[in-house]
Amino acid sequence: MLMRTDPFREFDRITQQILESNRPAAVPMDAYREGDDFVLHLDLPGVAPEGIDVEVEQNVLTVKADRPALRREGRDVVACERPSGTFTRRILLGDSLDTENIAADHADGVLTLRIPVAERSKARKIVVGRPGDRRQTAINA
Image (cartoon, rainbow, N blue to C red; front, side):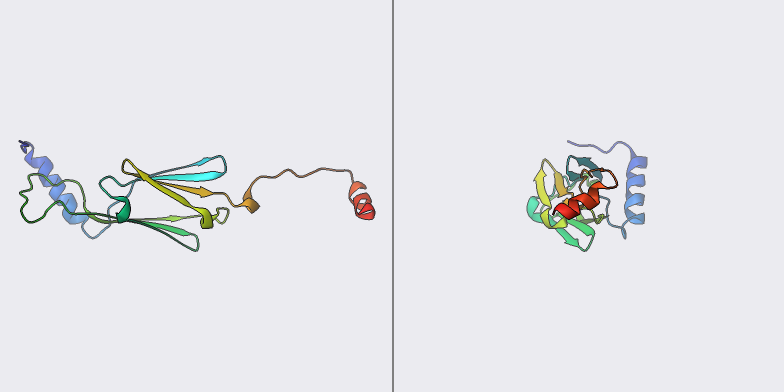
């Protein structure tokens, strides 16, 4: 059986819950670029894929997730330290991303979003010619 042994830790936890009860819980995130994609990993342990809502409006990506409360009728909860309820994370995306083709995957409590870089924003080679080459090409075309 699980025993509570540190009353000060329990007091700190309860105080933190009271002080932060009006703020949504944070959703930890990692972000990096991999090739032509930006990849986001958001930690959502205990949240089923059906409980995750991902939306894009203009350049704002919003992730909402619901983790059900542990406290239910018929349960005698001994410890309840993990937050429950609705979690929200808003991420401002740059104009260089293709928000029409975002891919989402959820495995092992981690939501992974892949956002491709828009074609117009990808690096491209510029041909460098001589001053007369441009006019010459226009005449031959």
